[in-house]
Length: 209
Length: 218
Image 1: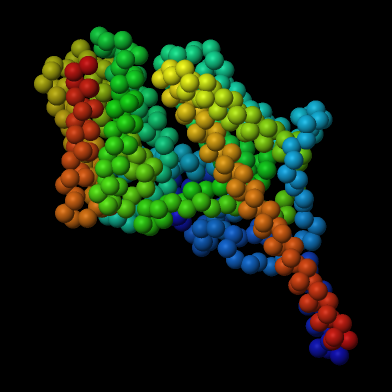
Image 2: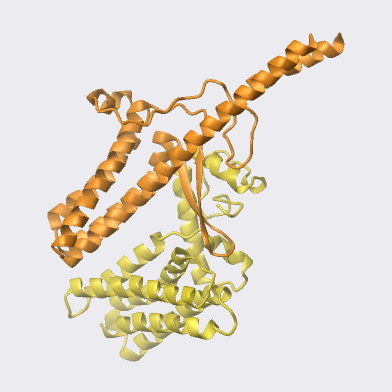
């Protein structure tokens, strides 16, 4: 929407004829998408989700490449939170209902709190955009949780700690590059510290539940 | 004489310019004069629900399907975590489907919420002015959207009074997703009508000017 290539450069290529979005302005792109086939819309959105996931996996510090993140969507955080909650609920002692509710509330409530904190400190970031990024950056922790849950017998405690630790650092670093670019210099630490706590809390759940 | 002929040919070409979708903020060439009239009222005759006359029957079904599934699972599972998960998933599917696919196909409208450079958000509405909208499609779309929003609103208020937290949260989620779509499309519809009115005024004045010009050149 704000960028030039809706789906041409993604992993899945649309089957429709190629429309040169690069030389149109934003409104023209939108009006052209009013008539497009259903598959195009689907593929375009899937590509956006995959792009954001790739951004999390290989965090890029440059602001220009983060511009595509502005097209926020909450699919990623939704799926990731569901996956995380279900994964952690499989092997635990407590009832899976409790765990599910806890993880869900922590993830969404935590993202909301961090966003409100950033906005109150004068950050120029939209609410949903920030929740979107924080949600997507849970992906490494998710991977760690899945690995630990399904290969539990092979891992001693120390190895679990290492895996989750790596995932935690990865998540934090990914979201930092986005969040810190939104804030003033002197308030960066105080707005970034809650993110650190947030992912630490989630990682703690992975190890000890 | 040659110039006269040339001028006449030019005048004849103008009114039948190929129709282009109207871009929101620019004044475009005039589109076809016969503009579709979209009436606001939702007719209640059963003939308007006849799927055989709909131009996109699958879209009509899907408009209802996800919303209905969300509500059904909510009623079946009531207070448990499963109801929470299923309502959220189906409401999310419904939201995406209505916003990106069904709305486009059934009523030819689209709303977007754009994030600007400084983080603020802006609502934008897109539509095609010369699109003919099937009456059955329109009825399905608006009935579904209004009906389910109303249903969720009723549940929300009844659970607000007898405060069962889990049910209330689920209701709020269902209501907010349905309402957002309803609101977006309602605003888009209003914007579309305003555009049509402006366009008709534009076309009339242009045609009159051309006609006068033609008369004066003879």
